[in-house]
Length: 196
Image (cartoon, rainbow, N blue to C red; front, side, top):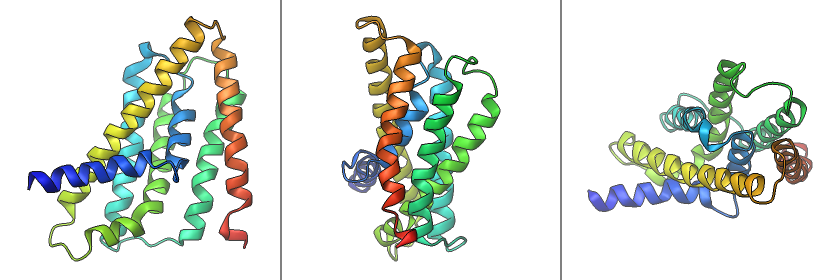
């Protein structure tokens, strides 16, 4: 039982930290980059909303409630990253991150739903014909949350170092990272199988 827990937890962590599936990392990067350590409660809530959306869509897919074309989902995932990156670029310095936070939370939840559906096929094979799919799913979600906190912490630390030690302005930090992510996402959209 404990072995199953650790296996499922690690499986969730590996899903996020997999170097070949870096879309998750890119999304978390653009989601976190506007914030500092003092905003930890907001960041924690945003990441949890993303995990919640991710988990809900996995539950719906595993139990056969929803079924979406994998080509469409693989196209929509880079769109979610692009939207957040563009939002960062066009709103940097214009308002405090606390404004319109409700919209941001619900958008993050919705984007989590899209990212979760993208992984549903693999997760369905992972749980297979197991009697209880719910427990492995919860353990998997905990692994995702843990990995996401590692990434978010790394982004916050990097932001702190760049802004405190190297004196990069917060505006430049947000603009550069969001632009880099945008540059990585555009080829993902162009090479999407949706248009193949």
